[in-house]
Length: 190
Image 1 (cartoon, rainbow, N blue to C red):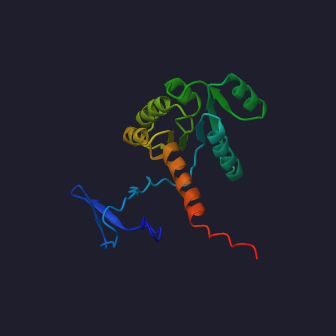
Image 2: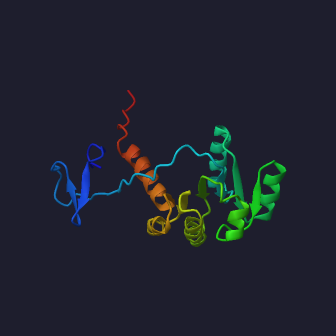
Image 3: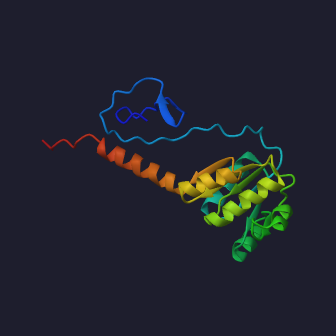
């Protein structure tokens, strides 16, 4: 991203170096943030249901989206109160841990088109990613991690897409401070 215009700058990683399409005119020592753009694995519009692992804020946002699109889903949740509450609301919920083959199968892994791992427990996310990829090689897996390093690990284990909390927080800090620092100065009252 160009530090002055905030526009993306095209480049490619080749032979261990980032090579730019055009030579940027930046000051020596300009710090850069490089965000690799890897195209997600193409999947057609989901034909099977979605499995949502965890029904905290992230899981509920996913469910809201799916409700709006009329896409069926099954929730995997450990919290007994949440399980009973969501069942009472008519949702399909499987109590248990997504790093268990039995739990994933009971949630319908064999016919699911997407697995959304929304839980904040990175170890459980990595285990579930690895297990689900072995059981269903063509399943689309989107995983949540707290740190970029664990996000890379989730990708290595088979996640198609990873939402990294650390990166989301960094972007929000940048956006909010950028807005503050670029706000026009207040004009004195006349």
